[in-house]
Length: 318
Ligand code: TXA
Ligand code: MG
Image (cartoon, rainbow, N blue to C red; front, side, top):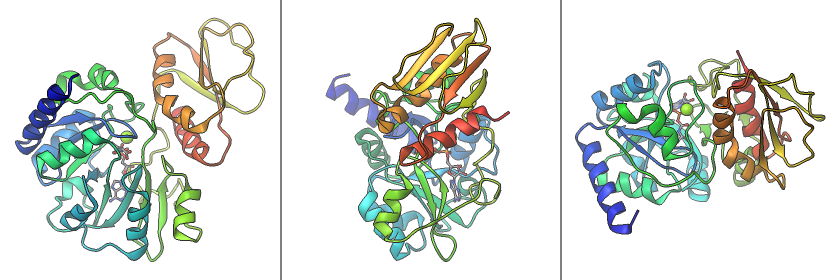
């Protein structure tokens, strides 16, 4: 796409957002399905299009930190510090919301999740629309998140008003969510900013919401990111193939025994950021390979590996 074309596409998409439209757009994490965060009818369309339960709140996206005051009542000092050091980037802050943010966006919660995406197209789109944009990942509810415009087109293309194509997403897994609802910050979802980075900025350890805690992040369901094929996780040695229709997904490159119908290696060198970037597209390819079962290697449980393993556990859950 030429620069002129891109400018026109962004302008058109921004106009759609101002008029109640629903537009898919790239961020550094995954593609989002956006609507004006101040338009309850448009937000309702997002829930319908995704088949998403109304109890699962949407993240509100801003183009600049000074827009925070349009959606958040107050920004505690530690939240301000995280925003200063880690925005724009894959970090969502849960803060007390202003009345202007409709209940449908926050699923009736007194808080709102906000983030400032590190993606030029996303920021220019929101800026041009002139309103904060609420957006979940642009996939049918419960399925693998989209990291290319083609993923969005394939599953939701006929249901939405426009798709902005920004190429493949650089981070590849969703934002880390930190809540400031309680007295001290709590991590609700592992994501593109490792917890180690957050703790280094804050200078202290932070609590992590337990997966079985249903109110913590209403959307954190046990089964999610789910391919239709059975997913079996493993550590260490590669399991033997179960015959035709067996797939294999490895975090890093190594010798692969014979007998697998399809094999994906997320990062030959074992880089966890490269593995995260390739994860969802690889899960989709394996899902489309006509398999009966896929064996999926767990990542090392540190840095981005924690967020990768969180997605894998949910993908494997039935
Ligand atoms: O990277 C991302 O965060 C992507 C891109 C598009 O920005 N968005 C994303 O949205 O992953 P979604 O809807 O797939 O996941 C949002 C998660 C859900 O688990 C939801 O429950 C949680 O954020 N969430 C949103 N607002 C919240 C709030 N006020 N309190 C607690 N959890 C909240
Ligand atoms: Mg999602």
